[in-house]
Figure 1 (cartoon, rainbow, N blue to C red):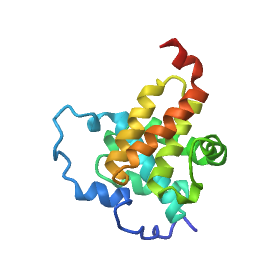
Figure 2: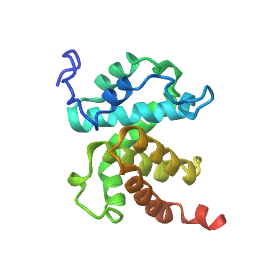
Figure 3: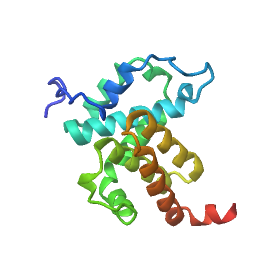
Figure 4: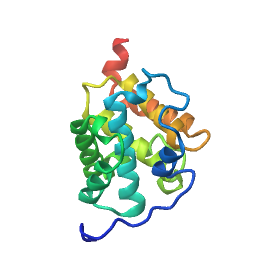
Amino acid sequence: MSSSSPPPELPKGPHDPLETRERKAPTAGRSKGSRSSNPRRRAREFVIQGLYQWQVGGQDEAAIQVQAEGVAGFDKADTALYASLLTEARNNAEALKLDLAAHIDRNWDEVSPIERCILLLGACELKLHPETPYRVIINEGIELAKTFGGTDGHKFVNGVLDKLAAVLRSAEIQKR
């Protein structure tokens, strides 16, 4: 796909992060100091959208970047974290899937596209970003699943990331 052609139209539905964000009012049900205004949280939201565009729409990183920059609120995201996590999750996707596979009770293709994106992001951070506490990573995954995922997707994400953290961050967990 050439980067000059317009991105393919993504399916609209309950698992489409762009549609989900558009339906919600920016401040609906959120206090002024809510975590969604956190630049790192925003970066993770945009990473989920980018991974979705990559997995479902087949878009390359350049097209994903152009689309993200055009979305309201991108300028308030931690763009360095966004770029790092998107690139790392995409480049390490196969290894991250292998790390996750032992903790998932079904075939990877049977996991919803949004939950796959959230799990890839969480696995990436657990494996490649030891500076971020494992509890923060798991909590962010849960919150992303509540925002973008299916009804009980956050429970699935919590269980998988918790088990993966026990393997990848055992020293950090034992310190608690």
